Picture 1 (tube, rainbow, N blue to C red):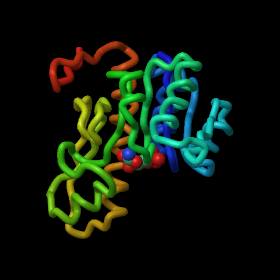
Picture 2 (cartoon, helix red, strand yellow):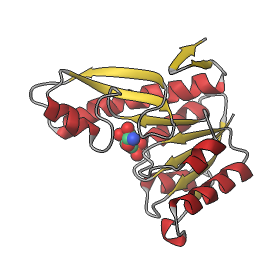
Picture 3 (cartoon, helix red, strand yellow):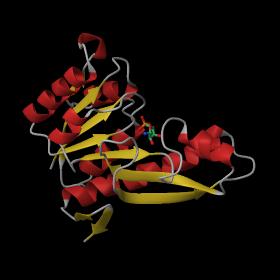
Length: 199
Ligand code: GRF
């Protein structure tokens, strides 16, 4: 399938997906990488590796909807069949979600539905949970709310700082995100209500 990746920063999840595409585990190709930040490391990595990397500047648009319409235009132009949000630090509007319903994935660094929103790892640490983790889910109109595809669990250690816990979670992100993309591209995911079944 034709995959687009949207990111705002480092891009380590994007790189993990790219690796799985390159080694043939994902039956797909990355047709475009879009960033809302001109200096995103992930965008530079995409361009250095021969991918189409596009910076779409939020300042050039009057509203979120206008911005998202431009994203949809680019994505359609590239023939996108799956959109992977990988550290894309913007709320996406219904305009976007409707255009790609059930074809947008996101990774969140918590065991949803706990700790939605920003700094999820810090929220988990401060709450005092014994186990944390990450979730790949379909994106719907509400933030960090869509149907769950895969999750991975990691222990929280007494000595953990935010960075320690984030690193332990990130290692799992790099496993479950490519795996979820692989399943999607192989048409192995079936949704029934909130539940996702893997065939
Ligand atoms: C990850 O922690 C991801 O779970 C969250 O944003 C971070 C992105 O990291 N959505 P990277 O840019 O993929 O390295």
